[in-house]
Each structure stands twice: as structure tokens, then as C-alpha cells.
Image (cartoon, rainbow over all chains, first blue to last red; front, side, top):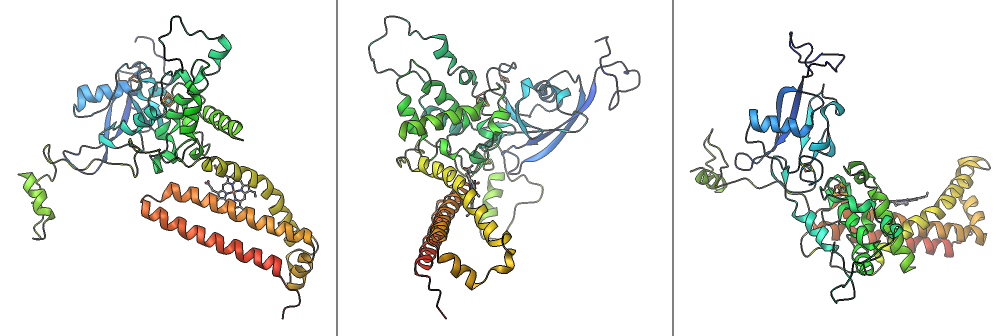
Length: 257
Length: 164
Ligand code: HEM
Ligand code: SF4
Ligand code: FES
């Protein structure tokens, strides 16, 4: 705290606080409470914050000190549970992985619920359609051998590497809710479901790849993807989602033609 | 009590909510903000074989061929040999005397029409929210496509340069 790290202390630093790392930030939050009004509206919260803190810390400050009615989801607070994807300055991010200093805190920081899912209250959306699409691709190991295995299912390092990228998904919905096709037609499986299908389709131990490909070959499957790359930009885990979707498309084409 | 307010609001009596009284409450919440269409347990069971796959492939393959056909068409019609001012009935008649240009134009007609139709179908699927709107728009689209392709094909094959 004693070490000044910012060259400039413009903005809200008060006299006598010249060495303080704190800056004044404004969170412009999209509020919606169906028990009060049918309209969603913007509400500004202005407070002091260390720019090295995260958006989630700011939301905590609001919830704990300024307005206890603010509603949002978070659990782990360390980027692994996937609870707190939200639209921050127009981009889908995890609030717990977004540092204030990285998102131009001199301007108001806009915070909205992710798009394309029913808004229940403030930043909380109904994730059910998202998880329905996830369930529909059968995201679990399927083998033809119905006997209980007597030993571990072994796999070479290369076979494991084949689907390594798509194992990283935390089901935060940042990708699916950044996809313009999903915004318009929520029936589309969405990138997250395809990522999780990819994780099993290309797993050498799994034997239901053909079934999953068939599911994704359908009307609301991979062919609705328009290669917008929004999903790849949004993924907090850095998964190359558009590439994974492309690999599923290629598998379908080479198998069927 | 605000329950009653909301109810009076929707009757034909013309009595609106009392000013200052909240319309919505814990017991009478407003509708939540829903997206146009949602995935449910029933979604995605409409198996249509490989239609979507072929449509996707066709867009790319026809696109590649169209680059050659369309740019060639534009060059011949609008740039080379005197530019746009040379186009006349005689010019078109001369071109269609050759089977090469007949095939070229026929191919361009079919590919561009089908490509454009499948593309617009995608856009209708994207933007038309209600099932009814989709059916009507696509019906209109397919009718226009069939009409244009048939008429164009008919003209290319039955074109008579001596017509007057
Ligand atoms: C000149 C060569 C052309 C190429 C290389 C080309 C290529 C493509 C490709 C690859 C797509 C698919 C995009 C996607 O699925 O994300 C597409 C979409 C489309 N094309 Fe073409 N095309 C050409 C000419 C045309 C022509 C002449 C028309 C009009 C008759 C047309 C109308 C459309 C429409 C309406 C779409 C749908 C747009 C969308 O999906 O957002 N294109 N084109
Ligand atoms: S692929 Fe990335 S953005 Fe999409 S749900 Fe998984 S972790 Fe989130
Ligand atoms: S709170 Fe768990 S991912 Fe952000």
C-alpha cells in the first residue's frame, strides 16, 4: 500500500491521498427487478477502488456497502466455476478475471447480463436452455462394452492431446451468449455445447462419436455457425472454439462424402 | 393491494393504476425479459438427413465458381471491348449464338439463384422470430426463385434473335 504505483493520480484522488493507489470508478450496471418494474434500467455506482482489483471486487463493494439488492452469481471468485460471466464494456468476460486497470476505468464501466438468455434479476440469467443444449450432446463417456471395466482405460499422450483444448471448458456460457446466431435463434446448440461434444468426439476412449456427430449435423447444429469468432474472443479459458467447431464440420464432411 | 391495481389496469373500465402506486410487487412480479426463441427438451429432434451439410457445402463450392463466372460476366459485359455502351439487343443475340455463353449464363443463373436463395433462407432463419413469419417468407422466397430460374432457363434456350 505504501508504494505508489501509478504515475498519475488524476480522477478522484483527493488531496492528501496523492500516494493512494485508489481511483474513482463508475460502475454502470443494468438493473432489472421484476418485483419493482417491468423495465430494465442503468444505474451508476461511483466509488473508490484499487485499479489492480477485479470487476468482481467492485460488485462486492456495491453489494456489501452501497446497495444490497444488487444480484449476481459468483462462487469460486477465481475463474474456475464459471458462475460470473457477464457483459463488461460490451464484451463477455468473467468478472473475477477482469482487472479494473485493463478496461479503461476513467470512463464508466458498463455491466450487463449475458445476452440471449432470459434475464431473471439484475445480472442473473436463466441458464436452463444453455444446459439443455449441453445435455443434448451427451457430454459423458460412452462405450459399447457394457461390462464394468476391470482396468483403467489407457490412452496415449498424442490421443489425449487431440482434444486437450476442449477439456478446459468451465461452462460459463460466455461463448454461447456472445454468438449472434444464438441471440437471434436460441435453438442453436451454441459454441459451448459443440466444444463439449468435440471433447468426446475426438477422445479415443469414447465410442459414441458417430451419434454426437449425427446430433450436431441437425438443423440447429454446427451448420448454423457463421464463423463469426465472437466465441473464441469471449472464452475466458482461451479455448480455440471456432477451430473446434471447424473440426467437427470437417469430420462430418469427410465421413459423409 | 397492488394486485388489484394491476387487474383494474387490464379491464375495460378505463381506470388506470393510481399514480405513485407501484404496478409490480413481490406477489405480482413483471414478466421476465425473455429472448425470442429458447431451446427446450423438444428442440433439435427434427432429423433432416444431410440437408444442412449439403447446403453449407454448396454455398462454398458455388461461391468459388461464382467468383469466376461473375467477374468474367462483369468484364465481358461492362469493361472489355467498348464497355457498357456496346450492350444492345444485337450484342446479346450474338453472345447467345454461341453454346459457350449459353452454358456460362445458364450456370451463372442457376448457381447465383440457388446460392442467393440458400443465403436468404439462412437470413430468414436468423431474423424471423415467429414460426408463421418464417413459413411465409420462405414460401415467397422459394416461389420467386423457381419462377426466376424457370423463366431464365426458358429464355436462354428458346431465345430467337429474329424476334421483332
Ligand atoms: C462472387 C462470388 C461469391 C462468393 C465467393 C460467395 C460466397 C459466399 C459464402 C461462402 C457464403 C456463406 C457464408 C456463411 O455461411 O457464413 C455466402 C453467403 C451468401 N451469399 Fe454469397 N458468394 C458469392 C456471390 C453471391 C451472389 C451473386 C449472391 C446473390 C445472388 C450471393 C448471396 C449470398 C447471400 C444472401 C448469403 C447469405 C449471407 C449470410 O449467410 O449472412 N452471393 N456467400
Ligand atoms: S468454451 Fe469457454 S466461453 Fe464457452 S462455456 Fe466453455 S469456458 Fe465458457
Ligand atoms: S466466480 Fe467462479 S468463475 Fe468467476
